[in-house]
Image (cartoon, rainbow, N blue to C red; front, side, top):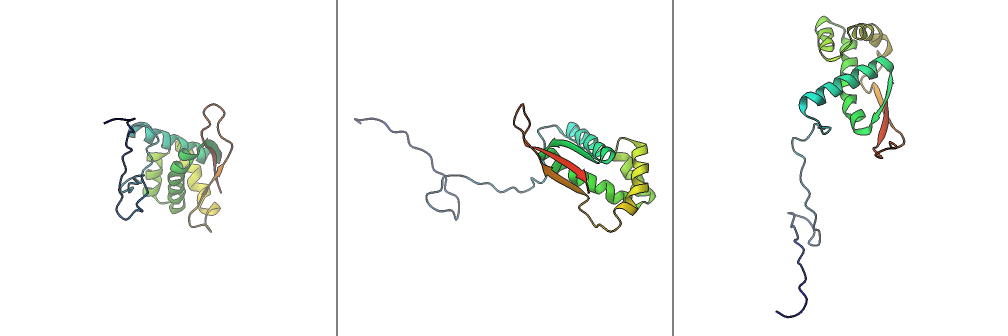
Length: 142
């Protein structure tokens, strides 16, 4: 062997992909949950706290991924408030940190959201965060 050695780049062949493609795309089976780079207990506490604050203030500023993750839980709490029965109230008390906030939600939700069948929150993208350039968003009640 004489001459310069040229390293060979490995190529991955994906079933049904064109011959020149070298990226390996995996399917996202059973990856519905956003983990938010936290263990399960910390992730649950974060989502509970964000849900409580969105219901309390009506609008909060957080990262885009967190806003999209908490949207599901806020919508579920409003659905429970619209139902209004005892089981729904106990489910909401098990998730939201503030008991008085749950009572006010169950008083206000049926008349405020009676004509709406979902989509109780809105996520608006804002400017990236100054320190680490993270995508930021505002989540608000409609």
